[in-house]
Length: 479
Image (cartoon, rainbow, N blue to C red):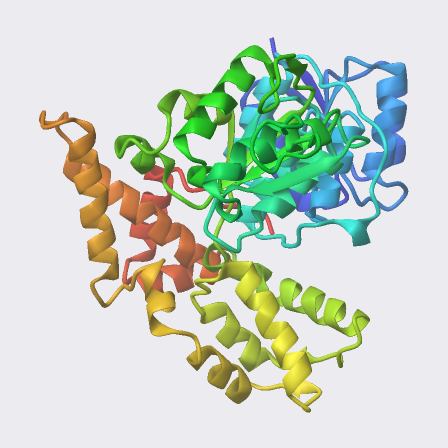
């Protein structure tokens, strides 16, 4: 038998689309455009599931969730919102929402969430909101929405998280967000960069040392594990950790305790670990430079941060943020005109968000114009080293992409240790290249399939078919 689903959204088109989709599955759907009617239905004991927008004429949908949970704690709530920032995702989860979906959303994804919500228990609500101006992450692109949702899901857990992504994508910012919105937020956040510590000092830095443990150890030193007690330890650039330190870290993760260098008394490791790297750990494992068992201990909850070129629609918001930040620090406030902004969106950004931040600060410090034009942007971007621009990302017209694919296929065969892999390699590689190409093109055209098909040189119907076959999330019928 179908369930009774209460839908509240002030957009009539969205209500109709949801009604048709859910009714086809056999559910009884009740529709309203305001929070007052939804609240009356909930008070009367109606409905097995609630789907609500955030911004409605009479009340914020997020404010309604705690009241729903108070009188009907087992009634699951799915939140939809066009206010798709990290704050919205976190608030929805903290207040007890089963799931948060940013608008626009894929209708198939919503149907899947509905099915899960009707068969799974609700997540318990957390507490404490954070001011929006203190949020560490900026952007409303689909790629960033996935990051926000992942943070919202993981913040109430103690799971070890592995963050991967190119240099400059903001891995430490995500680690801090996981800590600041997590269960250990009242404890310390301690970060250590493995690449910045001499190999011979890493064990002492991590685990501390006793007086007299080695030459120069005149006093006892508390390591990062001890400093992070009750909080979060962020192990940045974990791929640069030397083998001997990897062995000790694995023992800590297995046994939950460690000893200081030169010490004998075990110390309980009361911390949450978040690790990060820009390196390919699978390749390091094949080269014997990283322990496979340690990788699986760290990679409990993997998170991949998108490079800036995959979220070009966020560049304008990032530029405004960095410009305002520079102004607060005493630099002149600059604006960037639309042709210049469009040029920034087309740039490949090998240094990612860090490169963009440095550019904005440089514009504020070195140029007298209040509004920066495309000529200035062009001159600045042309100063970027060519090797950096093509080395990390490859080029479509040059050898970069081909070399990357060749390395990828070589690694694939190497992983099979000389044995021939299963058939279907041609289709598999095509799919791995085709999907990110279409995703990136849709991102560049802001989801406009007509423009994307033109850029790709495909018939629009062919593009639609590939979107379905490759399971690429897009909005259908919603704006």
